[in-house]
Length: 326
Image (cartoon, rainbow, N blue to C red):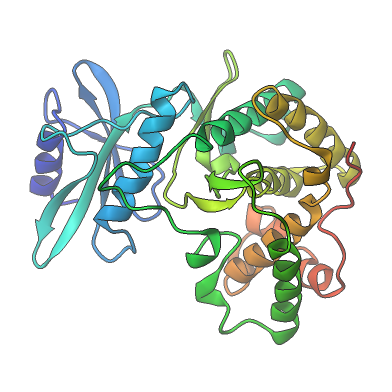
């Protein structure tokens, strides 16, 4: 990182001492911890050419700010000294995008071993997701804030648009069949709205002293079915699950997750019955994203575990996991 650029960014967001500590994480951005008004904060600098633009980043942060102000556990976006959620710093003919948020409590959830998770935490994750969706129903982008795209208009776990051209015809055909099934579902305010769309362990913090969960990384937020934010954490935990009875674990996870979710908003049985289709669409999307580099990943990595028998499972039409939904 150019020291002058970092110093400029810190000044824009009111750093107490113009000092910062580089943090791990941030696949496309540089992330630093700093202090603002005596409190810990996180600075994010996104370089040009990473597929982000000022209107899109501003729109995602406006929604996060709305969620934080309405009590959802998310890192509160911090305005700059110019009262902007996103600042820009010129770099030749291009721009760096700079944002800041309050630092969240705890550690990234992906750092916990599977044996450290318990049913109470699954319930709390469901409550967090349910509250997210309840608040989503009441959000309207204010004047000057662009509307977020639909799930199939951008690249995400369900929509690997950049990988479709080279995908095998058999897998693409199965994907189209699933999409037709999903697109036949009604889009009501209870089933479809603004979602996180990347709700996995890499994107929330957990403070194990009291099991506080904090959701972050809303770069991929878009309009889609609320079930998409349920299918993704279920699949994530199933990949990590070390046991043999995946169906039993899926039932256990959904029982506790749904209890938490329903403490915040309605979740009908007929909605949950559609979950296998979203799991299949997600399975295919993730497969297309990682297939070209999966052989370089360690067998015990997340990608290595996910890819075991994955192509055969997709082509045979087997469900990602048999579900017994009650």
